[in-house]
Image 1 (cartoon, rainbow, N blue to C red):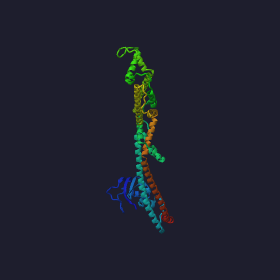
Image 2: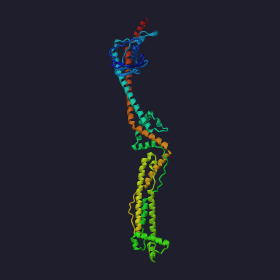
Image 3: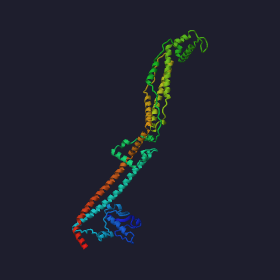
Image 4: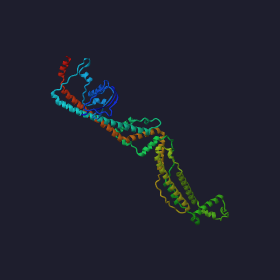
Length: 481
């Protein structure tokens, strides 16, 4: 059975202002003698033990006793199961010499037939003592669990507060453990923590937006993509066109010479000159006529069409080459990574398109050298992704512009999503610590219920043991006489 081994602490208790059991003082033995002058605290000690007997809190001060290795505080005396009896002046006044002429308490007489019940009472008190120790241990375990759980909530709330704090007004500037605990409990009840988790990429993007400052709007790209199939069809048509005329063989066989002569014929006609502008000699009478037959209207139309198509293709290629795209720094930070990929896709599509246009121009230059022969376009016309890539870039630009219109709301939602992600991330630890608190509390409750049951059984047996009514009345009458 447990016993008192030492008086651990007495503070502001009678003459004891701040008493701590010295390390060199022996613990209480089976028999103990405490003596001292009047006013040195003997009665105070007896009253502390009397409060333990009566299962009452000490009247004043802080009291801690070591009972069976457990530290029992004065406020826990009402729950103590230690069997103790104290005979001091207070007991005498209450039970022998009543002040103010009051009646004495009843005298209990135990009958012979109550021996077995008394033994059962003693056994139950031992069992109650063990349950009391269990409850004290459960109390300690619950306090530790509550401390660990509280520290977890405080630490996680602090992380959220430090991560999402801003200079202006924000609910996260005053974020505390109560808000964290309340939202975590709701998440546990709903069982939907998985939907709040973010990937590393998503988290980085939202953090950038959280730290971002508003940026101006960005104009969309106005580039109009051209269909490679349409361009190839037009070039193929020109390549397959031939000039039917009485051709001068040497010009037909020498395209460079033919182009030079063609330009010279135009100059002579423009200036109405019969003198060779190169050698300044008179031209033969039929020279210009033969050349005009060679370079007839059909030939001129074909050359003009080829030149026009080449200029158009060069302009198309130039537009693709000089297309200006928004700089990533102009967009909101959370869109930067997505924009980098879209910009790369667009530039790649434009490079492929420019190379295609260059091949078309080369084919037309070859046709100018061979206007009298049909040619075949030998260029692969694949799928063109330019339009798709332009739309992707413009979609990001539109999202940036929308965000500029609603920056405050979007940033507020971003912080909420980050907070929920951080709560969901720590939810397993939250549940583990919360369960530990609940299990410890359940252990305290079960021990308390067992003690209550034992108290009721002990009280029942003691009431059966006590036979006090008639003997007590007779003895009280004798004492009055």
